Picture: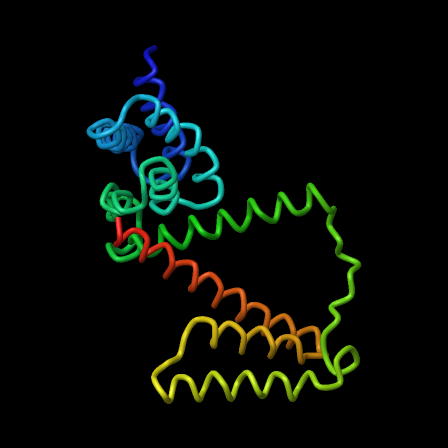
Length: 206
């Protein structure tokens, strides 16, 4: 079996695990993906798709998994157009360059978390260190950042920095674990959105 045939077979076998449609259809899509990869790139890049595909399909399903694997190896601007939405069981709008960009960032975060654990251990016992017990002025500080954010956007000079710091310091003011968690989710989500904007601008500037 040639390297090219091995690549097509690997992709088709992983797609077949979704249970959507006959194997022949999976093989057809796999061949199309490989052909697309080889139009402007070489077999080494195609091989990287094969190796990244296993993790992409495990972490995400169906069309999103295909898009992620292709994006990691080829660049996200081409990934969304390589999916058959009807066969994958998703709406046409589901797999977009924006979604692929976001998933790539989330995977970077996952890998950074793994690196942190490898270096420092889990550290689950660390105290949160939030709320007025740790910083008596925590609520006042949070309010000041919220006011600064509101003012900046009213004056049409708002930035990601304003939004991110508002969310971070709102989290720092929370004593209750459930509310702290909710605020941290919001802060992290804003951070991801900020990263998406940075990456999108970088793509547009190329």
